[in-house]
Length: 256
Image (tube, rainbow, N blue to C red):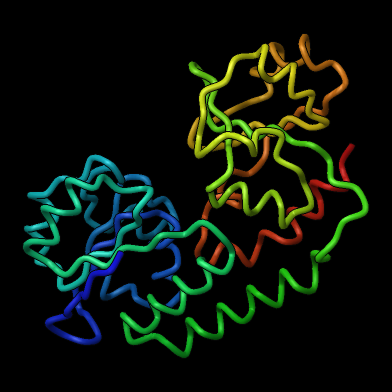
């Protein structure tokens, strides 16, 4: 983002995390004592969710609650947090923002957080393990790429387009995104879905919690497509959870 973030203390002693996947990363870097605030969506690790001070949602941060924690570092994300709120916080506290759209971005973010928090050795090891997991479990080229529509929301229906981390994960996992000609997270109609004629329809477990009861509208217009609920965290969380993603992606490809 072209900003310089000056830390009053290094490593920081009071960290507020405004992104669930980065909160989980901070936990795996051993920063239980340093993290003093998280969002209401930071559900992992569960112990932190139960005991850490919650400062609102990712896009509805309570500026007062954050200020009361007197952080010497706030960690956020360009896509997941509200720009106006971040700009207000940055006037008072050091705010470091990530922008993650690819696996390379994610690994760079992990290393950068390690440098910021004095856990560079752990972070570099974790990034290396993640890269190895992807290299060893997923080939560079696939003979067949099933065509997939990946849904993130209902009422209105919203899917994943290009310029997103999920799109990048779909490609790495060996799928072709049928809505890659659209940007970000477009709203679509069921007619548009029918015209796209996907082989697979992925209904994400988050942010909208799709269940099997939501399959019926898709069955009528795409009778040949395989419909399934997929683990949204393994497609969209770009921290330490990436270690679990490659075997999961392989299991999805093996399903018909």
